Length: 284
Image (spheres, helix red, strand yellow):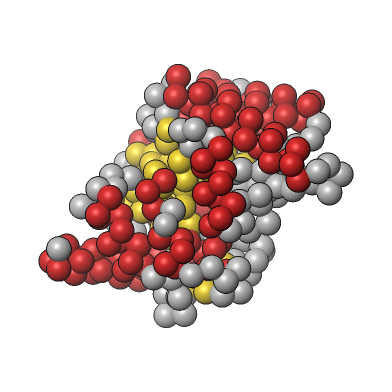
């Protein structure tokens, strides 16, 4: 049986407590927490400033909304290139590690066993080989740190990252033993990859982001969607996937991700996924 969650950052215009209540009102029991530098709900800066009191406030809001946390997604910089995991500067990477450790502690305190980060980007000032090496090293460090806390670590491959296509993503997973994926088909479909190719990454997925997508468009309505969600669900069912499908419509002025009605599309997509899962189960 599929498990669904919804991202808090689907509704960034609302206050945190309001966004959490809306997630519950939409019929979800789990929420994906976006610990983003740009977030209006969960702030790495506030967490670092006062870890205990900040975590206590978050736990209070989650309890009030009757929600459990399915994933903590940490992004240290305002955009993926700022404070990237593989930043060439040792000082920046050291700072990143401090933030990551706090994020992991936060994840554990929220009763969550899954943490997502970004893989890194290519930096014009250094060679691609060095960028790749640093990214793999930092991923290995994060995997080990999470494992010691009983948390699974995943990276989300994304456009403009060092894992911007299926081939590079598979190579990165092979290079970092124990790494899993928070898989979002949209990042691959946008740049012209086929759903059939992305299906090959399903065995490495520990968390899945779902929203409509198409060539040249990172986020679309369900009606305009070109992602083969039926094939994705069939593949997950064959693999015995036990993770979440996180409804992850976002509202941000990046890649045109502020042009959808997130409430309606979240409900429509969940219904479509539930219907698809029901049909594929009957066929099986």
